Amino acid sequence: MTPASPKSAPPTTRRLVAAELAQHGWRLVALVLLMLAVTALNVFAPLLYRRLIDSAIPSGSLGQIAALTVGMVLAPLVGLALSGWQNYYRAAIGEAVTSRLRQRVFEHVLRAELADVERVPSAEVVYRLTRACGQIGTVYISDKLLPLVSSALLLAGYVAVMLAVCWPLALIAAVAVPLSTLLARWLRRYAYAVDARYGQVLESGQRQAQEVFTGLRTVRAANGADYETGRWRAWLAEHAAVYRRSYVAHYAHLFLSDFVNNLLTGLAFGVGALLVVSGRISLGSLVAFGFYVPGAYAALRVIFQGQVGLGEARAAAEKLDALLALPLERAGGDPLPVAASAPKIEFRDVAFSYGRGDFRVRNLSFVAQPGQLVGIVGATGGGKSTVLDLLLGFYRPQAGAIEVDGRDLRDLSLAALRQVTSLVPQDIFLWDASLSDNLRYPAREAPSAALEAAAQLAQLHDFALSLPDGYATRVGERGQALSGGERQRLALGRAFLQQPRLLLLDEATSALDALTEAQLRAAIERLRPGRTTVVVAHRLSTIMQADLLLVLDHGQLVETGTPAELIALGGVFSQLYRAQQLTT
Image 1: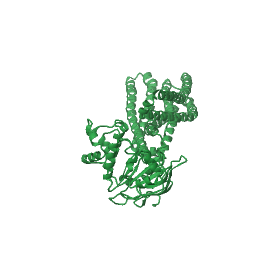
Image 2: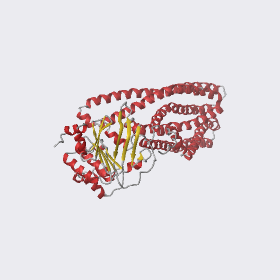
Image 3: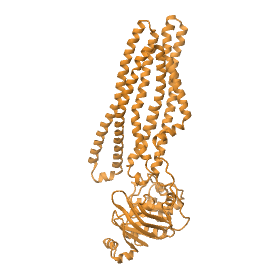
Image 4: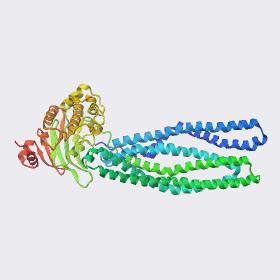
Protein backbone atom coordinates (compact mmCIF):
# COMPACT_ATOMS: atom_id res chain seq x y z
CA MET A 1 0.00 0.00 0.00
CA THR A 2 1.36 3.39 -0.91
CA PRO A 3 2.22 5.65 2.01
CA ALA A 4 -0.35 8.30 2.83
CA SER A 5 0.66 11.81 2.03
CA PRO A 6 0.49 14.34 4.83
CA LYS A 7 -2.90 15.98 5.02
CA SER A 8 -3.05 19.72 4.70
CA ALA A 9 -5.39 21.71 6.87
CA PRO A 10 -8.86 21.97 5.36
CA PRO A 11 -9.65 25.32 3.78
CA THR A 12 -11.66 27.77 5.84
CA THR A 13 -13.89 30.59 4.76
CA ARG A 14 -11.59 33.15 6.36
CA ARG A 15 -8.54 31.91 4.47
CA LEU A 16 -10.42 31.78 1.18
CA VAL A 17 -11.68 35.34 1.64
CA ALA A 18 -8.18 36.55 2.53
CA ALA A 19 -6.70 34.79 -0.50
CA GLU A 20 -9.27 36.33 -2.83
CA LEU A 21 -8.78 39.82 -1.39
CA ALA A 22 -5.04 39.41 -1.95
CA GLN A 23 -5.76 38.79 -5.64
CA HIS A 24 -7.34 42.24 -5.86
CA GLY A 25 -4.46 44.24 -4.42
CA TRP A 26 -4.52 46.90 -7.15
CA ARG A 27 -8.27 47.31 -6.79
CA LEU A 28 -7.94 47.66 -3.04
CA VAL A 29 -5.24 50.30 -3.51
CA ALA A 30 -7.42 52.17 -6.00
CA LEU A 31 -10.34 51.83 -3.61
CA VAL A 32 -8.36 53.32 -0.73
CA LEU A 33 -7.22 56.22 -2.93
CA LEU A 34 -10.79 56.87 -3.95
CA MET A 35 -11.85 56.73 -0.31
CA LEU A 36 -9.18 59.29 0.58
CA ALA A 37 -10.30 61.55 -2.27
CA VAL A 38 -13.95 61.34 -1.23
CA THR A 39 -12.94 61.97 2.39
CA ALA A 40 -10.96 65.06 1.39
CA LEU A 41 -13.90 66.46 -0.58
CA ASN A 42 -16.36 65.81 2.23
CA VAL A 43 -14.05 67.40 4.78
CA PHE A 44 -13.27 70.37 2.52
CA ALA A 45 -16.85 71.25 1.49
CA PRO A 46 -18.13 72.62 4.86
CA LEU A 47 -15.11 74.93 5.06
CA LEU A 48 -16.46 76.67 1.96
CA TYR A 49 -19.63 77.53 3.86
CA ARG A 50 -17.61 78.93 6.75
CA ARG A 51 -15.59 81.06 4.34
CA LEU A 52 -18.78 82.28 2.69
CA ILE A 53 -20.40 83.31 5.97
CA ASP A 54 -17.36 84.67 7.77
CA SER A 55 -15.53 86.36 4.88
CA ALA A 56 -17.30 86.65 1.53
CA ILE A 57 -20.66 87.94 2.75
CA PRO A 58 -19.29 90.51 5.25
CA SER A 59 -16.82 91.83 2.67
CA GLY A 60 -19.42 91.94 -0.10
CA SER A 61 -16.95 90.40 -2.56
CA LEU A 62 -19.04 89.13 -5.48
CA GLY A 63 -16.08 87.32 -7.04
CA GLN A 64 -15.38 85.47 -3.83
CA ILE A 65 -19.07 84.62 -3.44
CA ALA A 66 -19.18 83.30 -7.02
CA ALA A 67 -16.03 81.22 -6.58
CA LEU A 68 -17.27 79.73 -3.30
CA THR A 69 -20.66 78.99 -4.85
CA VAL A 70 -19.03 77.14 -7.74
CA GLY A 71 -16.94 75.17 -5.25
CA MET A 72 -19.99 74.28 -3.14
CA VAL A 73 -21.73 72.95 -6.27
CA LEU A 74 -18.81 71.10 -7.82
CA ALA A 75 -17.42 69.46 -4.65
CA PRO A 76 -20.51 67.28 -4.05
CA LEU A 77 -20.78 66.42 -7.75
CA VAL A 78 -17.16 65.29 -7.93
CA GLY A 79 -17.67 63.41 -4.66
CA LEU A 80 -20.68 61.60 -6.14
CA ALA A 81 -18.69 60.60 -9.22
CA LEU A 82 -15.81 59.29 -7.13
CA SER A 83 -18.26 57.50 -4.81
CA GLY A 84 -19.84 55.76 -7.82
CA TRP A 85 -16.41 54.57 -8.95
CA GLN A 86 -15.68 53.48 -5.39
CA ASN A 87 -18.97 51.55 -5.20
CA TYR A 88 -18.15 49.78 -8.46
CA TYR A 89 -14.85 48.53 -7.03
CA ARG A 90 -16.60 47.46 -3.82
CA ALA A 91 -19.21 45.50 -5.79
CA ALA A 92 -16.55 43.89 -7.99
CA ILE A 93 -14.47 42.78 -4.99
CA GLY A 94 -17.51 41.50 -3.09
CA GLU A 95 -18.75 39.52 -6.10
CA ALA A 96 -15.26 38.08 -6.63
CA VAL A 97 -15.21 36.86 -3.02
CA THR A 98 -18.66 35.33 -3.45
CA SER A 99 -17.60 33.59 -6.67
CA ARG A 100 -14.42 32.19 -5.10
CA LEU A 101 -16.35 30.82 -2.12
CA ARG A 102 -19.01 29.27 -4.34
CA GLN A 103 -16.41 27.68 -6.58
CA ARG A 104 -14.35 26.22 -3.72
CA VAL A 105 -17.36 24.97 -1.76
CA PHE A 106 -18.85 23.41 -4.91
CA GLU A 107 -15.61 21.66 -5.80
CA HIS A 108 -15.02 20.52 -2.21
CA VAL A 109 -18.47 19.00 -1.75
CA LEU A 110 -18.23 17.39 -5.19
CA ARG A 111 -15.07 15.55 -4.11
CA ALA A 112 -15.80 14.95 -0.43
CA GLU A 113 -16.35 11.51 1.06
CA LEU A 114 -19.79 10.38 -0.08
CA ALA A 115 -20.78 9.06 3.34
CA ASP A 116 -20.15 12.47 4.89
CA VAL A 117 -21.85 14.44 2.13
CA GLU A 118 -24.96 12.27 2.38
CA ARG A 119 -25.41 13.31 6.02
CA VAL A 120 -26.02 16.92 4.92
CA PRO A 121 -29.43 17.52 3.29
CA SER A 122 -28.96 18.61 -0.31
CA ALA A 123 -31.20 21.65 0.22
CA GLU A 124 -28.85 22.88 2.96
CA VAL A 125 -25.86 22.45 0.66
CA VAL A 126 -27.65 24.50 -2.01
CA TYR A 127 -28.61 27.18 0.54
CA ARG A 128 -25.04 27.54 1.77
CA LEU A 129 -23.64 27.51 -1.75
CA THR A 130 -25.95 30.31 -2.86
CA ARG A 131 -27.11 32.46 0.06
CA ALA A 132 -24.35 31.92 2.65
CA CYS A 133 -21.59 32.65 0.12
CA GLY A 134 -23.45 35.78 -0.95
CA GLN A 135 -23.89 36.90 2.64
CA ILE A 136 -20.13 36.94 3.07
CA GLY A 137 -18.96 38.35 -0.26
CA THR A 138 -21.74 40.45 -1.73
CA VAL A 139 -23.40 41.52 1.52
CA TYR A 140 -20.68 41.70 4.18
CA ILE A 141 -17.49 42.45 2.21
CA SER A 142 -19.12 44.73 -0.36
CA ASP A 143 -21.85 46.39 1.69
CA LYS A 144 -20.42 46.43 5.21
CA LEU A 145 -16.68 45.79 5.55
CA LEU A 146 -15.36 48.01 2.75
CA PRO A 147 -17.80 50.84 3.55
CA LEU A 148 -16.59 50.52 7.14
CA VAL A 149 -13.05 51.37 5.97
CA SER A 150 -14.36 54.35 4.01
CA SER A 151 -16.41 55.53 6.98
CA ALA A 152 -13.41 55.14 9.31
CA LEU A 153 -11.33 57.41 7.06
CA LEU A 154 -14.19 59.87 6.81
CA LEU A 155 -14.72 59.86 10.57
CA ALA A 156 -11.01 60.48 11.17
CA GLY A 157 -11.07 63.42 8.75
CA TYR A 158 -14.19 64.89 10.31
CA VAL A 159 -12.83 64.57 13.84
CA ALA A 160 -9.54 66.23 12.90
CA VAL A 161 -11.28 69.23 11.32
CA MET A 162 -13.89 69.44 14.11
CA LEU A 163 -11.08 69.67 16.66
CA ALA A 164 -9.45 72.41 14.61
CA VAL A 165 -12.71 74.35 14.18
CA CYS A 166 -13.86 74.13 17.82
CA TRP A 167 -12.37 71.55 20.14
CA PRO A 168 -14.93 71.98 22.99
CA LEU A 169 -17.81 71.12 20.64
CA ALA A 170 -15.75 68.27 19.20
CA LEU A 171 -15.29 66.77 22.65
CA ILE A 172 -19.04 66.96 23.33
CA ALA A 173 -19.79 65.21 20.03
CA ALA A 174 -17.07 62.62 20.67
CA VAL A 175 -18.96 61.26 23.70
CA ALA A 176 -21.07 59.32 21.16
CA VAL A 177 -18.10 57.10 20.27
CA PRO A 178 -17.72 55.18 23.56
CA LEU A 179 -21.49 55.01 24.01
CA SER A 180 -22.00 53.58 20.50
CA THR A 181 -19.13 51.14 21.06
CA LEU A 182 -20.74 49.79 24.22
CA LEU A 183 -24.12 49.49 22.47
CA ALA A 184 -22.59 47.67 19.49
CA ARG A 185 -20.69 45.25 21.73
CA TRP A 186 -23.83 44.54 23.77
CA LEU A 187 -26.01 43.94 20.74
CA ARG A 188 -23.46 42.00 18.67
CA ARG A 189 -23.77 38.81 20.72
CA TYR A 190 -27.54 38.86 20.58
CA ALA A 191 -27.51 39.65 16.85
CA TYR A 192 -25.14 36.75 16.17
CA ALA A 193 -27.38 34.26 17.98
CA VAL A 194 -30.47 35.53 16.17
CA ASP A 195 -28.73 35.54 12.77
CA ALA A 196 -27.51 31.98 13.30
CA ARG A 197 -31.04 30.87 14.14
CA TYR A 198 -32.45 32.77 11.17
CA GLY A 199 -30.06 30.95 8.85
CA GLN A 200 -31.17 27.60 10.27
CA VAL A 201 -34.81 28.47 9.68
CA LEU A 202 -34.12 29.51 6.09
CA GLU A 203 -32.25 26.25 5.48
CA SER A 204 -35.12 24.20 6.90
CA GLY A 205 -37.62 26.04 4.70
CA GLN A 206 -35.57 25.43 1.58
CA ARG A 207 -35.20 21.77 2.52
CA GLN A 208 -38.92 21.41 3.14
CA ALA A 209 -39.90 23.07 -0.14
CA GLN A 210 -37.40 21.01 -2.12
CA GLU A 211 -38.67 17.77 -0.60
CA VAL A 212 -42.31 18.63 -1.27
CA PHE A 213 -41.87 19.60 -4.90
CA THR A 214 -39.44 16.78 -5.64
CA GLY A 215 -41.93 14.32 -4.16
CA LEU A 216 -45.04 16.02 -5.54
CA ARG A 217 -46.39 12.79 -7.03
CA THR A 218 -46.15 11.09 -3.65
CA VAL A 219 -47.87 14.05 -1.97
CA ARG A 220 -50.71 13.91 -4.48
CA ALA A 221 -51.03 10.14 -4.31
CA ALA A 222 -51.18 10.20 -0.50
CA ASN A 223 -53.62 13.15 -0.53
CA GLY A 224 -51.08 15.02 1.56
CA ALA A 225 -51.66 18.56 0.25
CA ASP A 226 -53.43 19.69 3.43
CA TYR A 227 -50.71 18.18 5.60
CA GLU A 228 -47.94 19.87 3.64
CA THR A 229 -49.86 23.15 3.67
CA GLY A 230 -50.00 22.95 7.46
CA ARG A 231 -46.28 22.26 7.67
CA TRP A 232 -45.54 25.19 5.38
CA ARG A 233 -47.73 27.54 7.39
CA ALA A 234 -45.92 26.44 10.55
CA TRP A 235 -42.61 27.23 8.89
CA LEU A 236 -43.88 30.62 7.75
CA ALA A 237 -44.92 31.41 11.32
CA GLU A 238 -41.51 30.38 12.65
CA HIS A 239 -39.76 32.37 9.93
CA ALA A 240 -41.81 35.47 10.72
CA ALA A 241 -41.02 35.20 14.43
CA VAL A 242 -37.28 34.78 13.90
CA TYR A 243 -37.21 37.49 11.25
CA ARG A 244 -38.86 39.94 13.65
CA ARG A 245 -36.24 39.17 16.28
CA SER A 246 -33.47 39.63 13.69
CA TYR A 247 -34.94 42.94 12.58
CA VAL A 248 -35.23 44.18 16.15
CA ALA A 249 -31.64 43.12 16.88
CA HIS A 250 -30.29 45.12 13.94
CA TYR A 251 -32.65 48.09 14.31
CA ALA A 252 -32.15 48.45 18.06
CA HIS A 253 -28.58 49.63 17.58
CA LEU A 254 -29.64 52.17 14.96
CA PHE A 255 -32.37 53.49 17.22
CA LEU A 256 -30.21 53.72 20.33
CA SER A 257 -27.19 55.16 18.53
CA ASP A 258 -29.36 57.72 16.71
CA PHE A 259 -30.94 58.70 20.04
CA VAL A 260 -27.51 59.25 21.57
CA ASN A 261 -26.26 61.10 18.48
CA ASN A 262 -29.26 63.42 18.28
CA LEU A 263 -29.06 64.17 22.00
CA LEU A 264 -25.39 65.07 21.76
CA THR A 265 -25.93 67.02 18.52
CA GLY A 266 -28.53 69.19 20.20
CA LEU A 267 -26.26 69.71 23.19
CA ALA A 268 -23.31 70.62 20.95
CA PHE A 269 -25.33 73.19 19.00
CA GLY A 270 -26.71 74.67 22.20
CA VAL A 271 -23.20 75.15 23.54
CA GLY A 272 -22.06 76.37 20.11
CA ALA A 273 -24.74 79.04 20.06
CA LEU A 274 -23.50 80.31 23.43
CA LEU A 275 -19.94 80.38 22.09
CA VAL A 276 -21.06 82.41 19.05
CA VAL A 277 -22.89 84.89 21.28
CA SER A 278 -19.85 85.23 23.52
CA GLY A 279 -17.59 85.72 20.51
CA ARG A 280 -15.54 82.58 21.14
CA ILE A 281 -16.25 81.19 17.64
CA SER A 282 -17.66 82.62 14.43
CA LEU A 283 -21.10 81.89 13.03
CA GLY A 284 -19.46 80.32 9.99
CA SER A 285 -17.58 77.90 12.24
CA LEU A 286 -20.84 76.84 13.87
CA VAL A 287 -22.49 76.34 10.46
CA ALA A 288 -19.51 74.27 9.27
CA PHE A 289 -19.69 72.30 12.48
CA GLY A 290 -23.35 71.64 11.66
CA PHE A 291 -22.22 69.83 8.52
CA TYR A 292 -19.49 67.82 10.24
CA VAL A 293 -21.50 66.45 13.18
CA PRO A 294 -24.21 64.62 11.14
CA GLY A 295 -21.56 63.39 8.72
CA ALA A 296 -19.40 62.09 11.55
CA TYR A 297 -22.36 60.35 13.16
CA ALA A 298 -23.40 58.82 9.82
CA ALA A 299 -19.88 57.43 9.42
CA LEU A 300 -19.99 56.18 12.99
CA ARG A 301 -23.30 54.43 12.31
CA VAL A 302 -21.83 52.60 9.30
CA ILE A 303 -18.87 51.47 11.40
CA PHE A 304 -21.02 50.00 14.13
CA GLN A 305 -23.53 48.56 11.66
CA GLY A 306 -20.60 46.66 10.21
CA GLN A 307 -19.73 45.34 13.65
CA VAL A 308 -23.30 44.24 14.37
CA GLY A 309 -23.56 42.77 10.85
CA LEU A 310 -20.46 40.71 11.54
CA GLY A 311 -22.74 38.21 13.32
CA GLU A 312 -24.58 37.42 10.09
CA ALA A 313 -21.33 36.94 8.20
CA ARG A 314 -19.89 34.84 11.02
CA ALA A 315 -22.94 32.57 11.07
CA ALA A 316 -22.69 32.15 7.29
CA ALA A 317 -18.95 31.42 7.52
CA GLU A 318 -19.54 28.69 10.12
CA LYS A 319 -22.01 26.99 7.77
CA LEU A 320 -19.47 27.09 4.94
CA ASP A 321 -16.67 25.89 7.22
CA ALA A 322 -18.80 22.86 8.10
CA LEU A 323 -18.88 21.92 4.40
CA LEU A 324 -15.22 22.73 3.82
CA ALA A 325 -14.32 20.52 6.80
CA LEU A 326 -15.81 17.43 5.13
CA PRO A 327 -12.93 15.03 4.42
CA LEU A 328 -12.08 14.64 0.76
CA GLU A 329 -12.33 11.37 -1.05
CA ARG A 330 -8.95 9.80 -1.66
CA ALA A 331 -7.31 11.26 -4.76
CA GLY A 332 -4.44 9.93 -6.79
CA GLY A 333 -3.36 6.34 -6.52
CA ASP A 334 -1.91 3.84 -8.95
CA PRO A 335 -3.40 3.45 -12.42
CA LEU A 336 -5.26 0.30 -13.27
CA PRO A 337 -3.23 -2.47 -14.84
CA VAL A 338 -3.25 -2.00 -18.59
CA ALA A 339 -5.50 -4.68 -20.01
CA ALA A 340 -8.18 -4.84 -22.67
CA SER A 341 -9.90 -7.76 -20.94
CA ALA A 342 -12.33 -7.80 -18.04
CA PRO A 343 -10.96 -7.30 -14.54
CA LYS A 344 -10.83 -9.86 -11.76
CA ILE A 345 -12.64 -8.79 -8.59
CA GLU A 346 -11.90 -10.23 -5.15
CA PHE A 347 -13.45 -9.46 -1.74
CA ARG A 348 -11.53 -10.83 1.25
CA ASP A 349 -13.25 -10.77 4.66
CA VAL A 350 -14.80 -7.36 3.92
CA ALA A 351 -16.88 -5.71 6.64
CA PHE A 352 -18.73 -2.40 6.41
CA SER A 353 -21.18 -0.53 8.61
CA TYR A 354 -23.09 2.70 7.99
CA GLY A 355 -22.61 3.59 11.65
CA ARG A 356 -26.14 2.70 12.76
CA GLY A 357 -25.07 -0.10 15.05
CA ASP A 358 -25.32 -2.91 12.49
CA PHE A 359 -23.02 -4.25 9.80
CA ARG A 360 -24.41 -4.06 6.29
CA VAL A 361 -21.63 -6.39 5.09
CA ARG A 362 -19.70 -8.77 7.34
CA ASN A 363 -16.90 -11.23 6.55
CA LEU A 364 -17.70 -11.12 2.84
CA SER A 365 -15.35 -13.09 0.61
CA PHE A 366 -15.77 -14.02 -3.04
CA VAL A 367 -13.90 -13.96 -6.35
CA ALA A 368 -15.36 -12.80 -9.67
CA GLN A 369 -13.16 -14.14 -12.44
CA PRO A 370 -12.54 -11.98 -15.53
CA GLY A 371 -15.55 -12.04 -17.86
CA GLN A 372 -17.89 -13.68 -15.37
CA LEU A 373 -21.43 -12.58 -14.66
CA VAL A 374 -21.91 -12.56 -10.88
CA GLY A 375 -25.41 -12.31 -9.44
CA ILE A 376 -26.15 -11.08 -5.91
CA VAL A 377 -29.52 -11.94 -4.37
CA GLY A 378 -31.06 -11.91 -0.92
CA ALA A 379 -33.62 -10.21 1.27
CA THR A 380 -34.13 -6.45 1.19
CA GLY A 381 -31.54 -4.66 3.31
CA GLY A 382 -29.17 -7.58 3.17
CA GLY A 383 -26.21 -5.58 1.83
CA LYS A 384 -26.46 -6.31 -1.89
CA SER A 385 -26.22 -2.71 -3.13
CA THR A 386 -23.52 -2.03 -0.54
CA VAL A 387 -21.25 -4.46 -2.37
CA LEU A 388 -21.44 -2.28 -5.50
CA ASP A 389 -20.88 0.91 -3.48
CA LEU A 390 -17.78 -0.59 -1.89
CA LEU A 391 -16.49 -1.78 -5.24
CA LEU A 392 -16.78 1.74 -6.68
CA GLY A 393 -15.02 3.25 -3.66
CA PHE A 394 -18.08 5.22 -2.50
CA TYR A 395 -17.42 3.87 0.98
CA ARG A 396 -14.37 2.39 2.64
CA PRO A 397 -14.65 -0.97 4.38
CA GLN A 398 -13.89 -1.11 8.09
CA ALA A 399 -12.13 -4.44 7.65
CA GLY A 400 -10.87 -6.70 4.92
CA ALA A 401 -9.64 -5.87 1.43
CA ILE A 402 -11.03 -5.44 -2.06
CA GLU A 403 -8.78 -6.20 -5.02
CA VAL A 404 -9.13 -5.37 -8.70
CA ASP A 405 -6.84 -7.40 -10.95
CA GLY A 406 -4.75 -8.29 -7.93
CA ARG A 407 -4.30 -4.66 -6.77
CA ASP A 408 -5.73 -3.41 -3.49
CA LEU A 409 -8.51 -0.90 -4.12
CA ARG A 410 -6.94 1.41 -1.51
CA ASP A 411 -3.88 1.75 -3.76
CA LEU A 412 -5.72 2.26 -7.03
CA SER A 413 -6.87 5.52 -8.54
CA LEU A 414 -10.62 5.73 -7.98
CA ALA A 415 -10.93 8.01 -11.00
CA ALA A 416 -9.21 5.41 -13.19
CA LEU A 417 -11.41 2.63 -11.79
CA ARG A 418 -14.60 4.58 -12.43
CA GLN A 419 -13.40 5.45 -15.92
CA VAL A 420 -13.71 1.79 -16.89
CA THR A 421 -16.80 1.06 -14.77
CA SER A 422 -20.48 1.72 -15.47
CA LEU A 423 -23.13 1.62 -12.76
CA VAL A 424 -26.87 1.42 -13.30
CA PRO A 425 -28.28 2.11 -9.81
CA GLN A 426 -31.70 1.42 -8.34
CA ASP A 427 -32.49 5.11 -8.00
CA ILE A 428 -31.72 6.37 -11.48
CA PHE A 429 -30.82 10.03 -11.70
CA LEU A 430 -31.31 11.83 -14.98
CA TRP A 431 -30.48 15.43 -15.83
CA ASP A 432 -33.08 17.89 -17.07
CA ALA A 433 -31.58 17.64 -20.52
CA SER A 434 -32.14 15.74 -23.76
CA LEU A 435 -32.09 11.98 -24.21
CA SER A 436 -28.81 12.24 -26.10
CA ASP A 437 -27.20 14.43 -23.42
CA ASN A 438 -28.18 11.95 -20.74
CA LEU A 439 -26.86 9.04 -22.79
CA ARG A 440 -23.53 10.79 -23.34
CA TYR A 441 -23.11 12.08 -19.76
CA PRO A 442 -20.65 13.31 -18.57
CA ALA A 443 -20.19 15.14 -21.87
CA ARG A 444 -18.12 12.37 -23.40
CA GLU A 445 -17.79 12.69 -27.13
CA ALA A 446 -19.60 9.85 -28.84
CA PRO A 447 -20.63 9.72 -32.50
CA SER A 448 -24.34 9.46 -33.26
CA ALA A 449 -23.90 5.97 -34.69
CA ALA A 450 -22.40 4.67 -31.42
CA LEU A 451 -25.12 6.40 -29.41
CA GLU A 452 -27.88 4.85 -31.48
CA ALA A 453 -26.23 1.43 -31.31
CA ALA A 454 -26.14 1.63 -27.50
CA ALA A 455 -29.76 2.77 -27.47
CA GLN A 456 -30.76 -0.17 -29.65
CA LEU A 457 -29.07 -2.58 -27.24
CA ALA A 458 -31.00 -0.94 -24.40
CA GLN A 459 -34.28 -1.22 -26.34
CA LEU A 460 -34.52 2.58 -26.33
CA HIS A 461 -33.95 3.48 -29.98
CA ASP A 462 -37.50 2.92 -31.26
CA PHE A 463 -38.92 4.84 -28.30
CA ALA A 464 -36.59 7.78 -29.00
CA LEU A 465 -37.58 7.89 -32.67
CA SER A 466 -41.27 7.91 -31.69
CA LEU A 467 -40.84 11.22 -29.85
CA PRO A 468 -41.51 14.51 -31.68
CA ASP A 469 -37.94 15.73 -31.09
CA GLY A 470 -36.29 12.31 -31.16
CA TYR A 471 -33.06 12.14 -29.18
CA ALA A 472 -33.28 15.90 -28.58
CA THR A 473 -36.37 15.43 -26.37
CA ARG A 474 -35.86 16.72 -22.84
CA VAL A 475 -36.57 14.20 -20.09
CA GLY A 476 -37.57 16.70 -17.37
CA GLU A 477 -36.21 17.10 -13.85
CA ARG A 478 -34.90 13.72 -12.63
CA GLY A 479 -36.42 12.21 -15.79
CA GLN A 480 -40.00 12.82 -14.68
CA ALA A 481 -41.19 12.95 -18.28
CA LEU A 482 -40.24 9.27 -18.64
CA SER A 483 -41.72 6.15 -17.15
CA GLY A 484 -39.73 3.97 -14.78
CA GLY A 485 -38.94 1.49 -17.53
CA GLU A 486 -37.86 4.24 -19.91
CA ARG A 487 -35.52 5.67 -17.29
CA GLN A 488 -33.99 2.25 -16.74
CA ARG A 489 -33.47 1.71 -20.46
CA LEU A 490 -31.86 5.13 -20.78
CA ALA A 491 -29.50 4.36 -17.90
CA LEU A 492 -28.62 1.02 -19.47
CA GLY A 493 -27.99 2.74 -22.80
CA ARG A 494 -25.62 5.15 -21.09
CA ALA A 495 -23.76 2.23 -19.54
CA PHE A 496 -23.54 0.37 -22.86
CA LEU A 497 -22.27 3.49 -24.65
CA GLN A 498 -19.36 3.75 -22.24
CA GLN A 499 -18.24 0.21 -23.12
CA PRO A 500 -17.01 -0.50 -19.59
CA ARG A 501 -14.69 -3.28 -18.51
CA LEU A 502 -16.72 -3.58 -15.31
CA LEU A 503 -20.53 -3.38 -15.52
CA LEU A 504 -22.53 -3.01 -12.30
CA LEU A 505 -26.32 -3.42 -12.46
CA ASP A 506 -28.43 -2.77 -9.38
CA GLU A 507 -32.04 -3.83 -10.03
CA ALA A 508 -31.50 -2.43 -13.51
CA THR A 509 -34.52 -4.17 -15.09
CA SER A 510 -37.01 -4.15 -12.22
CA ALA A 511 -39.42 -1.76 -14.00
CA LEU A 512 -39.38 -3.58 -17.36
CA ASP A 513 -41.91 -5.95 -18.82
CA ALA A 514 -40.93 -9.56 -19.31
CA LEU A 515 -40.30 -9.27 -23.07
CA THR A 516 -38.12 -6.16 -22.78
CA GLU A 517 -36.23 -7.72 -19.88
CA ALA A 518 -35.55 -10.82 -21.96
CA GLN A 519 -34.25 -8.69 -24.81
CA LEU A 520 -31.98 -6.81 -22.43
CA ARG A 521 -30.69 -10.05 -20.91
CA ALA A 522 -29.76 -11.14 -24.41
CA ALA A 523 -27.99 -7.81 -24.99
CA ILE A 524 -26.04 -8.16 -21.76
CA GLU A 525 -25.05 -11.70 -22.78
CA ARG A 526 -23.72 -10.36 -26.10
CA LEU A 527 -21.74 -7.70 -24.23
CA ARG A 528 -20.21 -10.09 -21.73
CA PRO A 529 -16.97 -10.79 -23.60
CA GLY A 530 -14.28 -8.41 -22.40
CA ARG A 531 -16.08 -7.28 -19.26
CA THR A 532 -16.97 -8.51 -15.79
CA THR A 533 -20.60 -8.00 -14.81
CA VAL A 534 -22.05 -7.85 -11.32
CA VAL A 535 -25.85 -7.87 -11.09
CA VAL A 536 -27.95 -7.23 -8.01
CA ALA A 537 -31.46 -8.58 -8.51
CA HIS A 538 -34.70 -9.41 -6.79
CA ARG A 539 -36.19 -10.72 -10.02
CA LEU A 540 -34.29 -13.99 -10.33
CA SER A 541 -34.84 -14.30 -14.08
CA THR A 542 -32.22 -11.57 -14.42
CA ILE A 543 -29.42 -13.71 -13.02
CA MET A 544 -30.30 -17.27 -14.02
CA GLN A 545 -27.47 -17.19 -16.58
CA ALA A 546 -24.93 -16.09 -13.96
CA ASP A 547 -21.63 -17.91 -13.63
CA LEU A 548 -21.69 -17.33 -9.88
CA LEU A 549 -24.45 -16.46 -7.44
CA LEU A 550 -23.92 -14.84 -4.04
CA VAL A 551 -26.79 -15.15 -1.58
CA LEU A 552 -26.60 -12.55 1.20
CA ASP A 553 -28.55 -12.58 4.43
CA HIS A 554 -28.09 -9.71 6.92
CA GLY A 555 -24.81 -8.79 5.26
CA GLN A 556 -23.31 -12.28 5.36
CA LEU A 557 -22.68 -14.66 2.50
CA VAL A 558 -24.83 -17.73 3.23
CA GLU A 559 -24.72 -19.50 -0.14
CA THR A 560 -22.56 -19.38 -3.25
CA GLY A 561 -22.54 -21.36 -6.47
CA THR A 562 -24.20 -21.57 -9.85
CA PRO A 563 -28.00 -21.20 -10.10
CA ALA A 564 -28.40 -24.92 -10.73
CA GLU A 565 -26.22 -25.82 -7.75
CA LEU A 566 -28.14 -23.55 -5.41
CA ILE A 567 -31.52 -24.80 -6.57
CA ALA A 568 -30.38 -28.36 -5.89
CA LEU A 569 -29.03 -27.29 -2.50
CA GLY A 570 -32.55 -26.53 -1.27
CA GLY A 571 -31.48 -23.52 0.80
CA VAL A 572 -32.31 -19.81 0.74
CA PHE A 573 -31.95 -19.39 -3.02
CA SER A 574 -34.08 -22.44 -3.68
CA GLN A 575 -36.83 -20.95 -1.51
CA LEU A 576 -36.61 -17.64 -3.40
CA TYR A 577 -36.73 -19.51 -6.67
CA ARG A 578 -39.86 -21.45 -5.72
CA ALA A 579 -41.50 -18.33 -4.29
CA GLN A 580 -41.17 -16.61 -7.67
CA GLN A 581 -42.67 -19.69 -9.34
CA LEU A 582 -39.79 -20.18 -11.69
CA THR A 583 -39.82 -23.97 -11.44
CA THR A 584 -40.82 -25.80 -14.56
